[in-house]
Length: 356
Ligand code: NCD
Ligand code: ZN
Image (cartoon, rainbow, N blue to C red):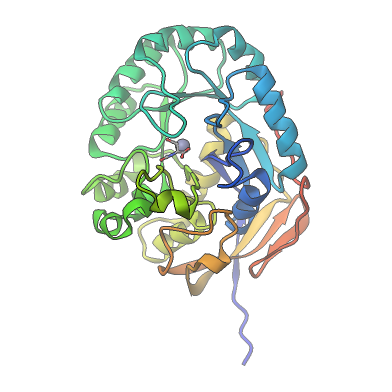
């Protein structure tokens, strides 16, 4: 018997936080494989972080990255500028070509940390209304918000993972301060028990905190975006004695969120706000009305590594049952994905430099 599932139409989703590893670590991912994973996962715009092997802290490194992306991307892609505190005169040169400035106040992949004392100088040199994004864990959050508030800067705090961090943001928001924040799929969907079972395959920055998952869900109203922090590493690195931090996400974010919708933990309206309307507004991202995603909300399937397009070839969610599957994706009017198959060519996507 034939049955016609009613497809749900969503706008092409936006992921404001990905690490596509290109150039420099293309054994983990590259602009082609990473953006293929995005499309297959219902995301048609991604913004890539600057913690490459050669950090993107100058106009020269940024322009080189943009040129490489133009040859490989299959969806819309944009970038952030980075700083190690030593490139103040480069910041406004990069500004016209990026969606914001990313700063790391805690140690993570690429040893890309800056000294807290440099924060004021960097904030001052960023003479832009494009957001400053912070990787700021635990008590660092409060300080960095305070400085930004005093200097009138627009701040986005990445990957909120703990009760303490979210409470700090909640207080700042309740006082009317212009700060936004994002939560990753792993902090929404991996429990501490999952982390114990998965070992290195669930090691990431910030780590999953015991009990935080319920606090994040219970205070969803304070969360502005879901950002995947798609951070692929090879299986060999994860199995080594010194595993790297980070997990892939682009293929699986939307099925996880649709499953939460089917369980009544999230509304579809909220899903669209978190993955489209809010990122679009906060980062001033242009989108195309002929770019959209069709999902079957009822389809039940199990995540397996064969269906993944990320080059790293694994997912912390392998074996999980999902309800809600991406069936088709249309990019600028063209069908680019249907029933697990991609119809894309390297460089078919658009590099959005954020220029006005
Ligand atoms: C990220 C990576 O691997 O680039 N790792 C991670 O655990 N999140 C870096 C980062 O966003 O901190
Ligand atoms: Zn990240």
